[in-house]
Length: 169
Image (cartoon, helix red, strand yellow):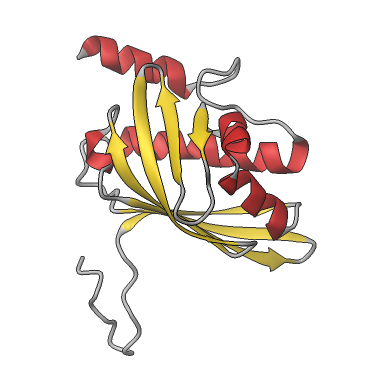
């Protein structure tokens, strides 16, 4: 899909990608903090270093393979956008964008998530969406209950699948 296209009503078309919504009991500022702190990201997604502030860089490790993301936007309690610069485990991710749009909803937060560019045409689509189906609820668990099932943690289901797929070549 051409990201500069417009719909018949004249509004910009939404870029293609994997989209899902998540609900949090916590306020948007708590969700934002979990998306911009390397320590927090390490608890809900995977081992992470760097800074999640705008113009920062985050580096996640999946086993011995790195994913490096440039932080394009970090608007407190509203929006976070990462651009994938390096992705050793999933090369198709390079050039994709990961967006988190937050808004207050009742006493909590509604999160609109999009991994822009990850479409059904990607060889990794099923594995990628299965990963997000684990790690986005892990984000909720981390923010709302100080939990999380980051990559390689005791309850991580994706790490075993990832290692198995790597061994098959």
